[in-house]
Image (cartoon, rainbow, N blue to C red):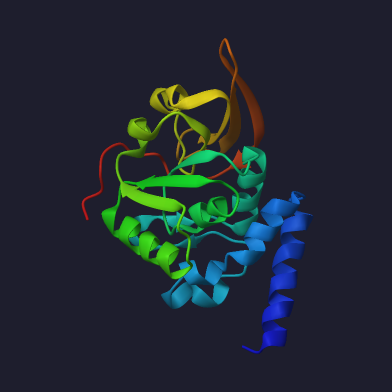
Length: 215
């Protein structure tokens, strides 16, 4: 692919994000700087720059770029924030977050995905993101509280342990709903006396599963 082709592809990629409602300049910059092609290999590699979810190893998916960008935009990550991502997958979402936050922890139940994601982070020179094999439904209590939490798998309700690990003033973005129906993307903001819930949009994610994967 020539430099001209690459530049045109990148312009089209960013145009698609803007057309879907992504307006935050920092998010757009992060999406431009992190090459989605790094996170997709094999048969689906030619489709890396299309706005569609794609299958990855362990029966998981890499979300479509517009959903990644919109979730990131809703999370409103600040430069000093410590962020927890639940559901590393390919590592693409965590890489985007790493361009916006001071520190990113991402947990994944499939150890194979953790190892592959960590190699990608190292190859990209992302030194502020750490991938761990763990049951994401319990969060990461040893690093809590978090300024921001992003969940990339659907739960029936926002998980209690994750709510408890969100600092006052913090924000969590989580898909909520049964795995076989349309889910709702929820923004949870922790206040001094409780939690506020805002419904953002319909989405479809793999379910949040307890325990570690058998790989």
